[in-house]
Length: 190
Ligand SMILES: [Cu+2]
Image (cartoon, helix red, strand yellow):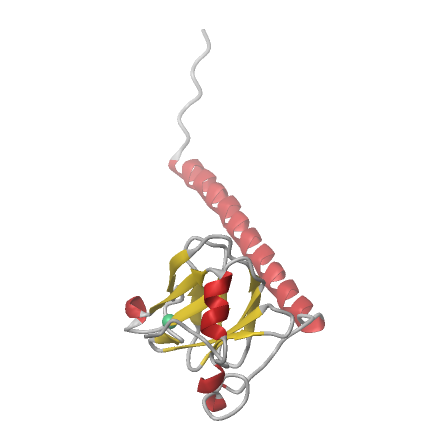
């Protein structure tokens, strides 16, 4: 039988713990350095290679002129038969609050914000945009099923955020054509 090793003295124990702490501190610093490098690369990369297409708009002049004046909001039929929907998000509503689109038709959404960042999401679809003041967000979509869907703002935008939502109604092509006939822009706002 050999004697069990004597328990470490107080100093040896403290040294060992210090060693462990130092190793874990290095791991923490290492993780931090990796994150700094990733953030720096992403920032430099985006500055050097900006998005291929950015559309800007003056959020203070939305109601005065240009694409997003009130009379131009809603759904418009294009010469090729597709539909362009223009909308604005503002604290705390969407304009129009009820969007009307035909089924089985190429739809282009074009939207922006008049004040702060809002979210544009259509329930039950993969349509999900951020509305950033100063920028036009656009997305192509097509609806296969008829019916009404909710369109809640999903970016916290202030004290009234939870009350900010709209609706989108998908109707039959013929019904849409009838409603759009003679009108420059259509929506389902009553
Ligand atoms: Cu909002």
